[in-house]
Image (cartoon, rainbow, N blue to C red; front, side, top):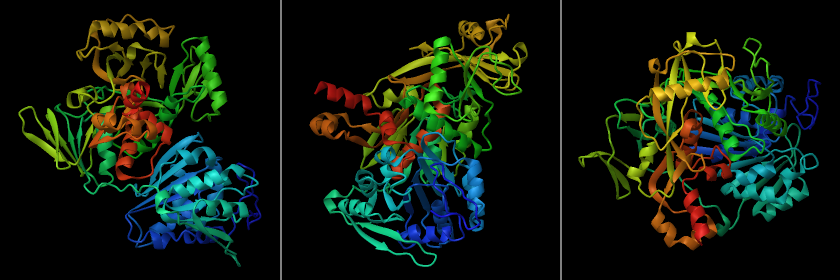
Length: 627
């Protein structure tokens, strides 16, 4: 790449000098948009999906977004999935984007949603959610096998092979080709003979064009693989209506993400109001998890936490505060593990940092009594306000006092009946988001749910030292909200009683010393108010999200299921449950995942994380063990 026309040398995080000359945008348009026949290809389509390897500072994305906005024949939705192993800092993006005056409005919008520089998949919505950018911060070799996307155009825009050799290996290029729709085009600036050979071996017709004047040399390839090797095309359902059982956070979030895509949603709940189950507390906390091995749970909470921050900022009705969460170590060994996790995972400080004992997390906060993790953008949220905000959509019809007693599938349509046998609603799709009640409607789902009662106590704020952030150490203490500090919660296994108890308040008060070692209180637990709810927990503590399994077919086709890992599903029946005490964190991203699966869109999570959430995981594991 060349120096800039203005004479300033701007380097990428990999040390490659970037081209931000006057003609860089023209070359992006020529190489990639024209090179993949994008504007002729997307004409009169409802959706167009671009896959890019090498996002850089987003020039190709901005050029494609601009072309989409200016084209009267554009598709309704633009999906752009991009891999970037070395993401830019926001300050660098400001400098780079300044060179492209015609893109100022779009680049400013991109920067407003630019995610933290942490590894994993980041789902971003812009342009009134008509444009979805899925950024994968990872190298191409590890990211490509984890993508679940059907790309209509592929931009191979990585650094040159001598700078980033793993991007151009035959295996990675073969994977990119496999992720294409039939007859899709791939384009690249790289005309290296080894790349040409790899694309031809993967089943592409390849041609090279030499640049002239301000246009650039480019490589074009069209997939012409045999029909037997083409991926099975998955189309969105023709009937886009759904009945969702359960109007807590899980059900409300699924309703919102499907309604945003044009689905007609009927949200049903047995209570007289929304969020009357475990989602009905005054407030709860949201924060990610950090582990030394960056476990599945840690990666899932990270992706969900970051997606939630973006989602809530677009919902002015939601009551929440990113006041910070201090996760205090329970003992010295845990403090060592926390410090090691941050060092090994290389997290930026705006995501998490280690706080020493007696250190102030922020210049204006009280010092921490013990060491711990400081999540500066974590905090608290009122789940009832979120539930109401999510369900304020013209495509969502809410039916309260609606107890679903039974379900029946007739002629590809689900019929839901009340206890008297009267029809409540019928729809081709049903989502069971009714937590602990799911076993009543689906007696043998292939998984077991545990139930845990949790009671929080509302402690008058004037009785506690003033804090502006959340404390967490086996129990939680929120800063004052309407004069009350939420404290708790208890963890009472197999207890379904939702009445508040003085002994539970006493238990919560006894845990205050973990959080405030120097504070003493003489509060009478019998005078406290609070709330009790029942958490729904899976055996492995991960949520359950996806299609309900067809156990009869699964066992009849056991050999094929074991070999392929493909589990037969009950048509049109989906599950969203097991959110436990992390419903505030989980709900948004998991709803986006389920909606993406139903719409056959690019998925917002890596494939192994999607499998970790699959309701079939326990039954598949048991079947393999039996065999």
